[in-house]
Length: 383
Image (cartoon, rainbow, N blue to C red):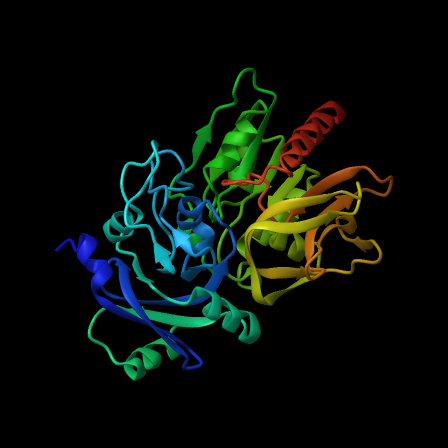
């Protein structure tokens, strides 16, 4: 039975794995859910957040207090469904107010079966997660005691060790045609790709062949690709092995490579670096990143709970060439980008930990798609 407005009036509870509990009101679907509690700092773009496959098995806490103002439209989704395991807001808008809105956020969550909670002190919850770190959490709007929900939370799988790319990838390959004349062809591994990414590549004259996460070198070669792209995605990069083997072969063949977010972490692993779990991750659309090559600071969109452990001070000789850290986060010095060059210093491959497709905003880093297009041009000329 559809709950609609009534769902917002039904009591709900949120319980963290360390035992702290928050009371609130149901928002979205009625039921019970568990996942990893993370907070997102964007003041806009909640629709893009909800439909980002990188949030698979995560319960998102919105730090902005007022959510749902602009409702939900039919243009801004980053995938075909909502991926979050649960949703936490403080003050949901009682009705949407936007000429683009087609339905309310509450009804959209309900339609997709996403259990949420409203009326929570999200400031206190966020401070708790910052101090204690990301942890498992449960939300229930059904008759359930705090202790029984806590027991369920503590038996839920952790994000560390989770290989989730196969759960969010495309079932079949598909092609996004180049806009205008075809400049190059790219094989894009879908580890949880967002709609905007192949569109931005296509806008630069690149024909994008999107492949499932299980694809191997034979599938890449079959596309006659001039280069390879690895997308964003969920899970622990240390638990993901197939794409790393593929990337090893791609780099051995000298194909240009560009990776975003999860793709950056897998690039780091292919270069011989380790990855580790951040205390509470980077999520939102206001993270400052320093580009060590240009000296410029970019305001960037993030969604990652893991990072690459690579030396910032000096380049490293790897089996694929000379690797160096290209970008760092100014908040905590986390590695935010890698690049690979040959012995002569020519760029071979690069990646960034943040989201240059920036849906929704900011757009400081869109130049990275131009950099990849130029790298493809240079490779085509060389061969």
